[in-house]
Image (cartoon, rainbow, N blue to C red; front, side, top):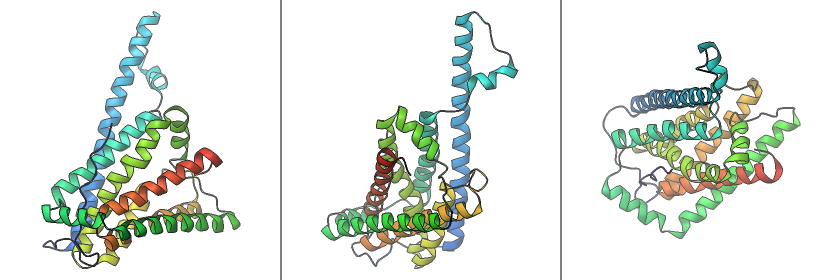
Length: 281
């Protein structure tokens, strides 16, 4: 399965923001973020319910074939278990990708002129030079933060690490497609085009970088869902937040969302390679 790639937007000059919109840009940012959160949670719940119904049918059919009869309701939850790596990736793709596409087409759809300007920017050799530079900087910065944290006894484990390890063992091809192609596309569409782009268009790019970077960090490490302590969570938020700021800066500097998607994809590819070769994320 694939998610349609984001329609890149920009202007012919990196310093020129997308077309401005009316109303309060900060209020618009929070409204966009609220819609994204509600949509993401709603689609996650819907997809989980579909998975639950599917598993209930599978368990019932298996029990019927074995001659044991329909399981008791008290035993059903244990027999169904939890969504595996493939189901979790599909749920994430539907939920976050659906939220990104909804916000893009409803709230921040690019005009034909913006798409043409972005495609022009994507053909400039300097665009890809900046992309490699930012991707390298993100890798070095993340590694440095992790190394410094380790020196003082902070060694967080990303919440998605068990999922990545399970997917790598059973669905390696789909994991690469998901992490290197699909996720960077819809995440950049949501966090950079929609959230950052609104404040950039209003002439407040620095605020947009900070707020969209913070949202990017919180979505990747949701408070209350991780076994990490406060210091570990703060380190992960710093890494993800800095990554989000870097990708937003690249988007603005090059004038094309494709640059941010490519840098994000490179970062995820390096993380996967590290997981394969060194067992670390």
